[in-house]
Length: 258
Image (cartoon, rainbow, N blue to C red; front, side, top):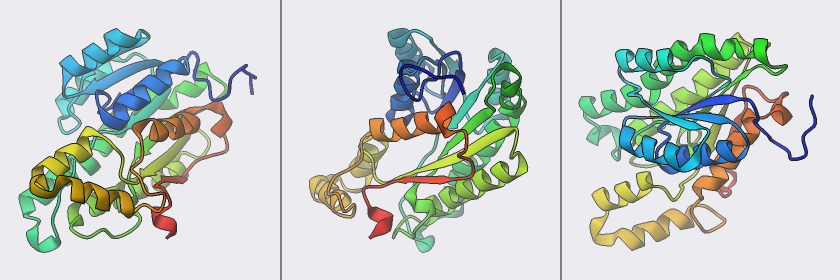
């Protein structure tokens, strides 16, 4: 393994991050950029992705709707080669099984599960070819959630989909043990626009009370920061993690340990 003056470098690597224009995706784009990678910022919000790319250098925006095969195919054509794929795009839903309508369930399956499948399948030849350019194999990091590891009240559909992402991660790691590394990161509750939208939509009248409850369920007593998740993704994508595949990397302030 080549030695670097700094650990976890991604020099000469090309990465694509779905949902890369905001939240954990945006933080990961910036982290990869600092590590020396060229990053494709893939997002349905192309103007936001373009603005982020313009602020960084060594980055380019690409329109990508993970639910639309035509959109994914167009993105594949734009990306000539790829070493690292981060499946970050996802949506949430609040409700027990009794309050999860079939349309709600299908919408989460479509984005959080089918989207990961479609994007991974489309870019797989690119990532498998990474080994021809580097000593290291190509890498996929899926952003799952503690919701895929433990049951959370009022999160029936979300728990279901994130559990599926963890299962896909492990299956791919077993299917391609010597030509691909695939890992999942499972964040707890993180300070992102995703969480702010949830608070505004479902707890507008008691937003700060609910925010305090979200903090309290994580033993360290606070929400996570996007940068903390991004640092773990960078590690998993780096050469230092060459022996790491099929793992579920939990970053949740002690939530699942309690």
